[in-house]
Image 1 (tube, rainbow over the protein chains, first blue to last red):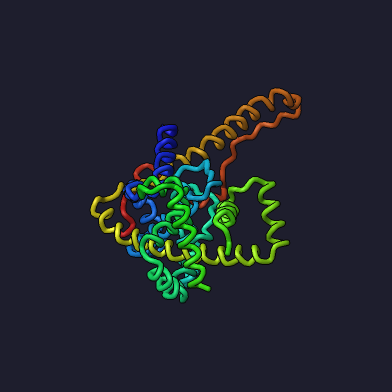
Image 2 (cartoon, helix red, strand yellow; image 1 turned 30 degrees about the vertical axis):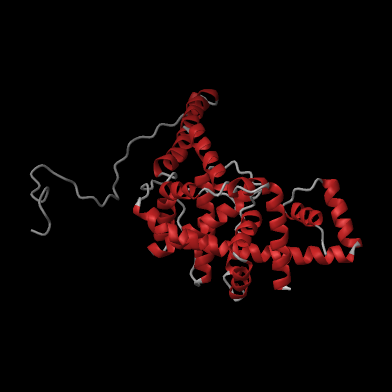
Length: 184
Length: 148
C-alpha cells in the first residue's frame, strides 16, 4: 500500500516537473479536502482554504522544480506542511494566534521562501515588470518563462516548440539581452 | 557585449549545475573581471524579473483552473492522526508497565517474606465514626425519592 502510494507520488512529481497541469488537478482532487479541513477548522473560510491551496501549490511547484529536491515524506505530508506553514503565517499577518491551527497530519519542516518572493512580485513593482514583458512579445515571454521559471532544459523547450536547440538558445539569448536593456 | 557562452555559464551557475571546480573558477572570474561581474549582476536582476512575472502568471493560471477543478469535486478527507492509534500508543505501554509491575509485586514478597513472628494480622474493627446510617430491614426511606 505504501509502495503504491510512493510510486503515485513520484509519478505526480515527474508530471509536475514537466509542467503538466493535469497533475495539479489530480493533487487538488486528492488533497484539497485536507487543506480545506486544516483551514476551516482553524478559523478560516472556504475562500481562505482556496487561497492557501493555490499558494501551497505554488510553493510545492517551486520546491520540486529545484534539481536538488529530495523528500522522503509523502506528497500529502509535504503539501500539508506547506499549507500549515502558510496558514500560520497568514493568521499572524491577520493578527490572530497561530495556536488555533489544529493538526490532522504529521508535518515536516518546509522552506516557504518562494512564497515571500511571490508576495514581493505582487508588490508595487509588478506593473513595471508587466509593461517590460508586454514589450518583449509573447515568444520571448514564453521562452524565458519556460527556461528560468519552469526550469525546462533548452532541448525540452525545443522539442515542445518544434524548433532546433540552437534556435532556442539564440532566441533565449536575444530575449534576455533585450530584457536587460529595458530594465536597465 | 556578453557572449552567448558566458550567458549559458551564468545560467548554469544560477541553476546550480556547475561542478565544484567550475564554480570555483566562476567565482574567481567574478572577483577578477569587473565587466563580467557587472554582467552577472544584470543577468540575475533580469532572471528575478522573469521569475516574478512568471510566478504571478502561474498563480493566475491556478486561479483560472480552480473553478474547473472544484466542479470535478474532491475526495472527502479523513485525518491520518486518529484517536484510536493515539489511544493504542498510550494504552499498550501502560499495559506493559502494569503487567511488569504486577509480576514484580507477585515475585517480591516471596523473596523478602518477613519472619512469621512479626506477622501482624489486621482484625476487622467496627467503624464507630461512620456517618452512614445503618440500613435495617423494613426501613421505609430505602428506595424512595427524597423529594417525595
